[in-house]
Length: 581
Image 1 (tube, rainbow, N blue to C red):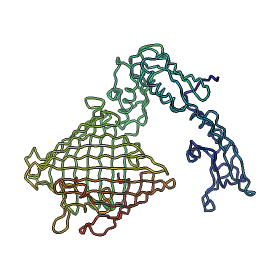
Image 2 (image 1 turned 180 degrees about the vertical axis):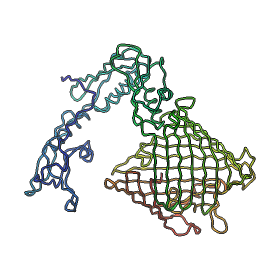
Image 3 (image 1 turned 30 degrees about the horizontal axis):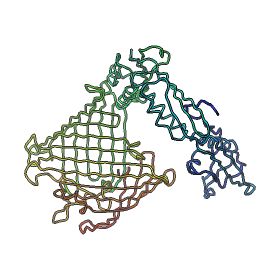
Image 4 (image 1 turned 60 degrees about the horizontal axis):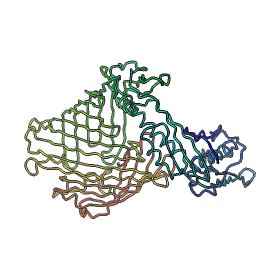
């Protein structure tokens, strides 16, 4: 029988003390690196842990440095691989190596792995806690994995801290016999705590009163770890802080009333952002935004922005007040002037809006907005509308997501206030799903649709408010707005319903370049026919991605699979900044 403490802290891997480029210039070049004997852990996963690499076959090219052998890095790699196996439950794993001399200046590296038997968790029990036995017991039958145990303990401690046990601690003891492990989690919950006071530091121009308004807890409330996390999120959302840290000092661990510290670092309050580019829908465009993040104090954000392109022009002035009535609410007031020129319609519009956005959770938002204005600067074309939007977004990156989900649902009503002929009710929904798949790829799916109900006279909904399909962010076998209803002259007229679906596989080839293959389907219809699956129009294609520091630059070639005699050429080319969705 063996008995040991199974530490919960992260393993301290040996870190190479030299990096590529600092290796001795006379060291031999590594021509190949082979790993054998591994069955349960892939070769790709193991190589990703290593600092040693085989030199590329094209290292004869200028500015391509050959990978040379560094014994310190290689020894560190071997130790790291062995630790990785043992952290996964292969406690008897052994890692050995061999060096093959290919020439005076070239070698090959071989790593041989003996994985050994897998140790599994037979029993998992808790001492000293309440209502947590089942949570830890879920580990029974699973491999003796450091990550699995650490995650389980973290969930248990977080649950205790959310119930007021601010200083809950836990230590796991492990007893192993014949590849079976018994775990005991020894908990020390400590006292149930309340918040005595909030101590704020690091702020200079933003007052303590504003920071206090951004917190989701108050002095005197029961301590909850989740409240600290939510407060950190709300303070970041204001946009005025570079860093935000909340915590409790260990020096008061014996007391049941704790002080919470809030340490912030402010961002520069004034910022100017300029941009320019080209895409096949808007032609050349330029944009700019002048922002003051603490306008008049109170963390108010004032922004003047504009954008001009070959087809559209707009200017927007917006003021955002954080923590409106509640730490989760944001008040937005804005005005806009815009000119839009499309083949399907032409419109000038001036107006303003008032909205309140509520951050329900870190991933969920609800926005209620009221807007009004005039079209083509004509008093008899005044409009008013109300809009409600619900958004759930768990994507890991806004511009180039690798995983996560986005779902949103929007309802708009326009025209009721002025009893306009073009009064309508519009409902739209969209879902996006992203998941990593093998070969450094991401599977991306999108489904979206919408419907417009005419509340005024039939046919009164103006073209600018109708649905259109086709273009670089839609069904890419068609040019912008070219998919859907058309008049006798072949010009798009828009529909009262739209449905679209897209599937895309994005693959990173090298560090800054990638490819994509995609299938798109969709349609717009004068009635509700867009939701008929047999009416959908299909396209397929492929694209190239340059993964720039400001986001992916993409070039897509879409091929129209469905017949459409009014759509022009069958192949469409699209250039833009950012993914299609």
